[in-house]
Length: 199
Image 1 (cartoon, rainbow, N blue to C red):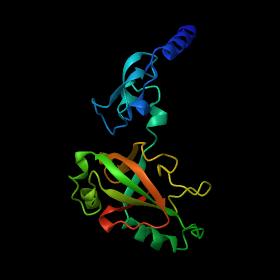
Image 2 (cartoon, rainbow, N blue to C red):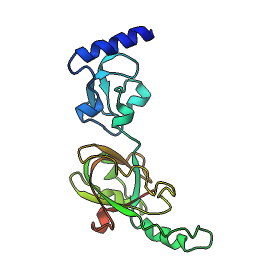
Image 3 (cartoon, rainbow, N blue to C red):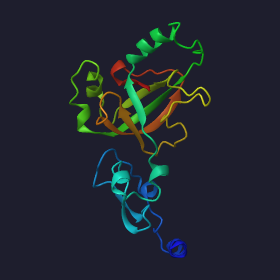
Image 4 (cartoon, one colour):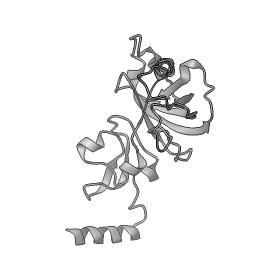
């Protein structure tokens, strides 16, 4: 079987487009999206239609490069939660190691699920303000910041501006979407309804 797989890989180098996948197609989609597909090798070693949506992990039909092209989503919540974080950080129960200044990432939202607009609970109402095409600011501060790398998970710092990245709202896992990195800045300057923090 391994010899056959190696032969198929060698043959695919001679066949233009045979290595196509999520990255080449520029596709990464939240949830289940039958329109989010490409042509290329699947993880089950079959060549043909493969998928770049989050559901492909459960259905087993992901493109070979899904894990690299579609990294772990950023988990976000409203920046109002940062006020509570600041209050707790001054509490003697929290670590006093909060000198790290942090940073802000700006993203342009590309897509989002309709579940975001349906939220009306007091702690999740902020999700209603998420819109496609808007620039949003996401603050990376302790304790969400990794103490070794001094980065937040899902910050997209290593991506170029063309890579589609995923985000998911805390409080409603069905409120999720995609965005592209605009830039890193020292401090966030977006309006309050478009300001979030990494969790």
